Amino acid sequence: MKKFMDSWKKFLLYGGVSRTEYDQIREEIRESNRKNLIMFSAIATVFLAIMFLVSLRISGLDEYRWIYACFAVFSGCIFSCTVFGIAKQCHIQILIHVFMSAMFVFGIMMGAFSDSDEQTVVFIALLLTVPLLFTDKPIRMIASIFCHLTVFVIMACCVKEGSVLLVDITDAVVFGTISAIVSSYMMSVKCQRYLYEQQAITLSEMDMLTGVRNRNSFEMSMKEYPSLCRKTLTSIYIDVNGLHELNNTKGHEAGDIMLKYIASVLQAQFGKKDTYRIGGDEFVVFITDAASEEIEKKMNAVIHSVEKENYHISVGHATQTCSSIDMDTLIKNAEKEMYEEKRRFYRERGIERRER
Image (cartoon, rainbow, N blue to C red; front, side, top):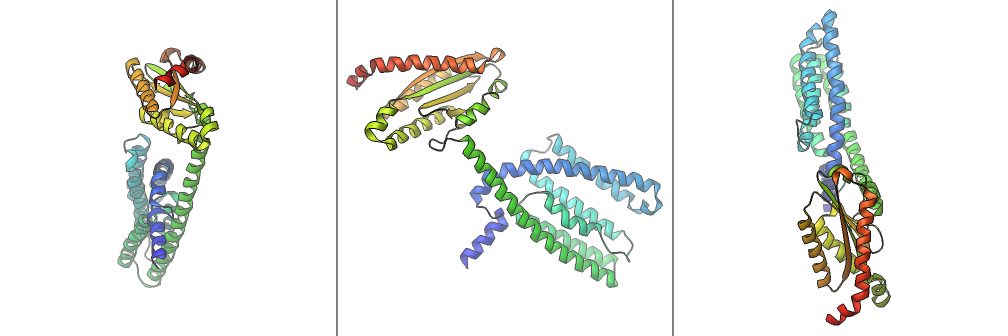
């Protein structure tokens, strides 16, 4: 029973994924909702504006004129807040519910001001379609649907009667329930899709052994760095000394432990976003707009941390100003300095070992 309740709780709160997984895809959900909100609020604004203009020419629509005008302005405001970044990213989830509520209220008012002998169509149509436009926790969508459904039933009881009232209430309850079920299922499907997409991206861009970005990510990101700096861009090239010998003498597990440790030290100093493993024992780091003293300090900190564990690395770096960046040259210069340091290490490693 507890397992069943936990499954339903996970479904209603996080669309069938775990809380940790939901947190991982939260930004993707927000960005998708932002794009959908821009598109559908624009469509709603244009449609309602057209209906307002039409109502000026057709006498049968004049009673709805102010409804069209009010909701056209309201959806236009939501569009402006979203597209011009007035609303922060964290407010997108609030805005989608405001927009959904506006559409539901529009449908309710259209039904309230229609002939009492006519069945409500607009609200039922919006009840079925609007929740499918966005992605959010099923529990919130269900609450929104049934909250507006209750308002509609109360409004219908005030303005309609007889068989029309019975049909409207029945339709609203039936289609509202269908909407809650279908929208919840679709949200679960969307959450699973976002999670699979993120996992696929992670697998394609992350080195699974060390947790830093891999060669594929390195190749894709190289083009972006010139536009990310304002003054200088620095490339640091790191080669792990003795990996082959360690694998041969103590096994590959020992080599993996060394690589993971060095990667963790690089991430701690330079950040996960700018640290790449581009080969078996090679790492590259990029730093934007940093003073040479700061770079030297970080490099020395890395070397000191690595040597404390009795590991060794060779490090080279190169810097270019943002006005004349050539990524290939930048990386080659850093690699060249690294190889000079590596040759020096292997020339002197017997002396260093005796000193230890």
